[in-house]
Image (cartoon, rainbow, N blue to C red; front, top):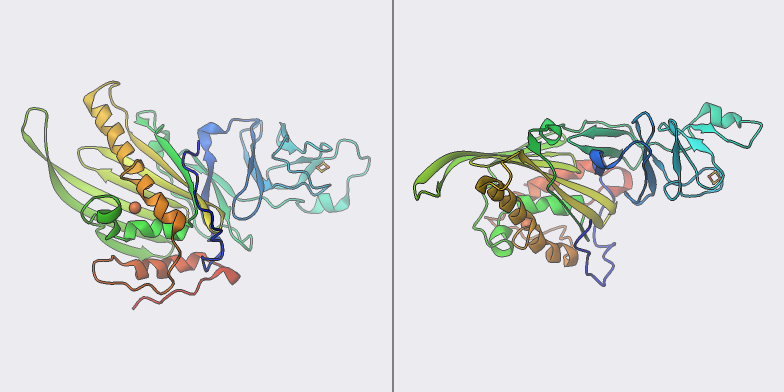
Length: 343
Ligand code: FES
Ligand SMILES: [Fe+2]
């Protein structure tokens, strides 16, 4: 359930100098789409229908029927391997081919030769249904990363949050690189990002350290901590934190259009004894990152800011320009933004 709608009276769609970046994006949780389910979607400045057929196979097609244009996601029904259009019952397989026209005696030759609807590459990993978007419909050029903890029965994966904001994947993810804002927006002194490594479509950062906490007996306990963040293209980012608590946080960014984005947090952590103090610690930790001092504090900034193409960067700002240079690879064709080159 989206719990925080944007509150911006100004259409800032012209403020971002880019289109929708390509990549793998969240389009649903795998455990929330059962065989027979059909769901309308509006992502990437397009419209789609997502369904799971009776064999359990996923299909994501452009939404509007090639016959007379009905949106298949509104009232369409799964029939065997296909989804049937609600208007005149034409059926489409996950690969976009038409599989039946129930009332026609002659099947159009073109429908035998080629798919009538664009089908998006879809995958399931880490309990997420991922769709590949590319503005020129180019096939995937990298893969999603699976985190089996999200489907491991010994792990809890039910803490999920979602918001919608006037932002884009590039701007939202820049927030993690923007070290200085943690003090002013989140009330936390600089959060060390560790060392960042850029390799093709992957950005990796890691920081290792130790921290001390007082336990319930008043003794100091020391924990080694390893925090690793992997951005896998524009739509999949995961932070794994291993210290006293072991928490995986997947940040899922799906653009509805270039300046309007759904933001999701999906956590996973080892299941704890129900009602235990440790379970509460896990819960509070997840809540904090999502709550008033966490993402909710970022939203008013996102919803009302503009993008500065040539920002005045000072020392202590974090490596924002290097990040932008890396991100610019995900725009294709006319969508490539004019970015300030990193020095
Ligand atoms: S519009 Fe879909 S079958 Fe006619
Ligand atoms: Fe933030």
